[in-house]
Image (cartoon, rainbow, N blue to C red):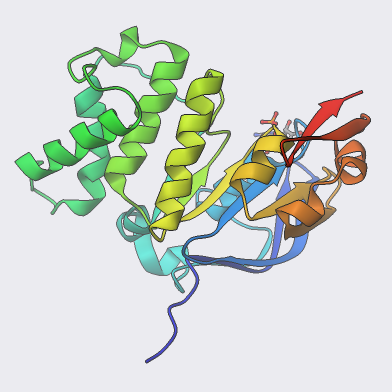
Length: 258
Ligand SMILES: Nc1ncnc2c1ncn2[C@@H]1O[C@H](COP(=O)(O)OP(=O)(O)OP(=O)(O)O)[C@@H](O)[C@H]1O
């Protein structure tokens, strides 16, 4: 029996934007069950790298394989069945109910002329409930708060049920309670076999909710390693260009700016 290819693999990946190098020669894999956090200052290139990994912009060099296949091979529909993408910003031009939005997550799984089934609606309802939006099914998306809209985007992703989640600042707009609830939710998804790559601004949460961390320094330098080895006060002080100290609370490492 042949081994399953990783959910995500980069080979000698180089990413550039507007004359700026985000990374070069980046090689890593994300296997089922793994979570990788990307950290860096504003403008370091986290979104640019994630959109490149999602196949939404071209790499400057190198290869990206999702389940062993390039995006050209997968096509947009095949890609949407395998990887889910949570963008940092979203705009809703028209009103639609929360359930209708969550149901769009099922579209990659439908045939060309197929309508959503009762099963799809059940999956979308369960996804809304999983992010604490039970009872919001009929609410117009234009009336949702920032945090509620963010959780609706997560529910849409959960309904899509990809194997690989690429999440750009998934806990932006969320209160502390929902930050932890959402990170726990993706921890469970990983425990059930998904892969998760997410940009985070809180190194303490990255340490708690990721196995590995990728630091982007904004000048092309990148460091990747096990989260507990990479996320040190010394490295993070250099990354953020601001001194940080690590403190231990009940055996958990937290970081505070000096
Ligand atoms: N379309 C564009 N044209 C020119 N420069 C761009 C464009 N898009 C992004 N940039 C620049 O590329 C750099 C990387 O942006 P990116 O959004 O990837 O950073 P980020 O690490 O995600 O930042 P943040 O933490 O603020 O979300 C930034 O300096 C940004 O200004």
